[in-house]
Length: 243
Image (tube, rainbow, N blue to C red):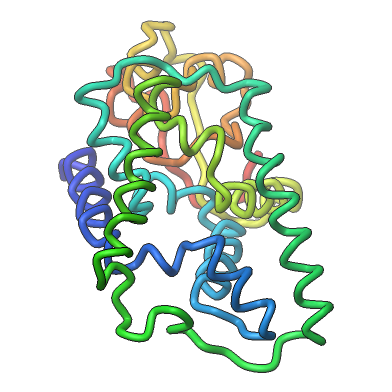
């Protein structure tokens, strides 16, 4: 099984579907719907992604995220690593106020009264008119600009409003150590060739994670590139209780 090619095909197909599904990832639509006491499709999607992260961590980011698919297409033009580290905290300065607004609007609306999956997406297709195309390509342009200026998957590192949900879910599953998808490594096999670092789309250093006996970096998207590029089979997927 050629897992890297399969993963790449899946995530690129996901990007090609982005014009259809982008509204279901919209931070604005959830605000607009909440103000009217409505649970929109994006609310349900974020909830499902959080719940999935309690078992699968950030595998969605590595295998299915449409924005991630586009960023990986940009790899042909972008070889720069994202700095990460403390800069990864930038996304929380977006996420926390956004969550605060949603909670405040929900209280003002007297709670949620109904579910409307197609809120502001009556046809079921997100990009279905000229003005929607303008917004869509503005978003794609912004994601591209971040990649070109700040490095690989910069949008994921610094501005994604969905990522914190899955990071929180990942931290919860790691703390309670119930069976879940994660990486494991055989430290004795590692020769520090750093091949895994070269292949990591999130600009991480998997070999250092191996050396530190900690394969739980919250920026890891479980794409499996480090598994497939390692010449010595040091890293592997595991579905068990994290150590």
